[in-house]
Image 1 (cartoon, one colour):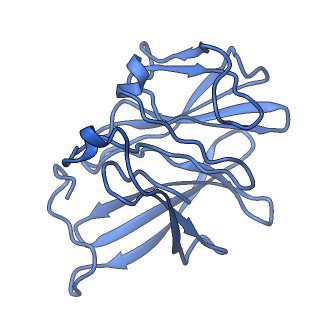
Image 2 (tube, rainbow, N blue to C red; image 1 turned 90 degrees about the vertical axis):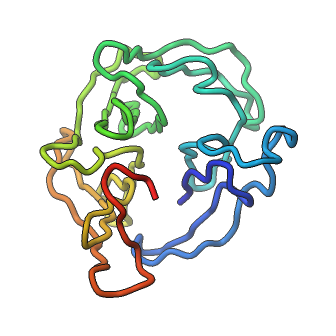
Length: 222
């Protein structure tokens, strides 16, 4: 598993687990951010965002401006076999301006002749999780919102990845949610129609113990 490290160095942490419960930090993928003159001072909100990792496949990362100059659209480009450079300028395969503004952090999978794209939209504060699917990687894509904020004032679901267990079950692992007395790590399961079936969470009480995670309010990130 990996996660955003923003401007922290070393960055792009790599964590390992055999049961999705107990995790161990095993390495960092990068030891510096470039250009040096830009990251020689704190750059809050910049750096490594929404990375994705694949088993037995390359981990690819890049430095770019805000969404490489685009927003609310998903773009795809062909790469060389080594995964070191793009071969085409790419093309837009999904425009989220109408239904999924600020769609970002996409993760693409191919399962049973379908291409699936998991991507959050709507922004971090009140966003939702969208899943797109098509039999052609270039589209057109069917769209479905599978997770949303609901009636709580806690941030809506954001980012996450499709996880398949050794038994063949599918789950969606996404970011931790902090509440007044607990730390929740959400793992949601889906059926073949991409319908949410149940939600399993790991719970860690912080009401009476320190230095466990604590909450400063739903309007803050610290």
